[in-house]
Length: 400
Image (cartoon, rainbow, N blue to C red; front, side, top):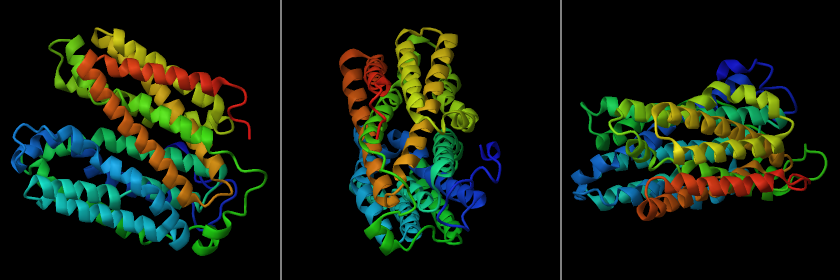
């Protein structure tokens, strides 16, 4: 993805920080990528970690899976406002160091209570995605910012695909539990790299009081951004927890490699096509959001009917197209909404909404699967995506 934009492309348009260009944007994205490895790669192995901490049947795995997300959501708006007041670079460094501390504590925890406390701290002290986006929004505006946000989503997708593979590969030598402590070195390395970057934007205290003064015209309302962010995260994430069970139910004897590849396919679509999609929708996020929800609805509905490997490949590609269109267009809308606003507070609130959608999706998936079987989550996601599609298609939705 880094090669999809020219050096000029990421720095065109108005920017607050003159020293902040393509290399700095890529450095922030790289730091988020490496810091996300433990956060995204180790939770799938909770069923292997918990028996060693006294939970023999790993019955707390589902709850602990969402603990960092819940506490991260609660802390994000507070940390965002603090970034506007005290400095975005300082608070981004705090987030990386907070992850390192929580990973070390999790890796050396010797009881279920201590491990749970470390996961709570991971949520409270982390928040690297919102902090990184607020950092970027203080230095860039318009298409430059939306490209940077698209790149950040690419870093998240890449970590989501690669981190579980890396953790599984290390498991024969180091248990997933102890890998928490080992992988703490990654956010520490990210913090060291970020320390070399310039502080972006206006003076923090002034920005917190007056907001960004470089925007022209009325502020873009946040209602549509928050509503569509919640609906999009909910409708896409709800298919994650029980996808492997659904594939195994529909295709008996399918190999774990094939199941893992099907899980990763939508995220690979994003990595391959996000920047191309951005060029098409950087001036019109509304149609992109509507098209994204339409494709997500089609893809999820197809999951409910797929009964062969080629069919699952097809519906996963449909979902990947919707994922790419939706995430890119939401990044464009977020960049538009950031004009004239202190970015830390806005992206902190957006993180609260996004994580809230993920938690709601996880709870809905668990309830639906237990009551109606593994196809229930994808059907629920289809309904939510269709409702959001209708809202996105209304002419008045994106008017200021």
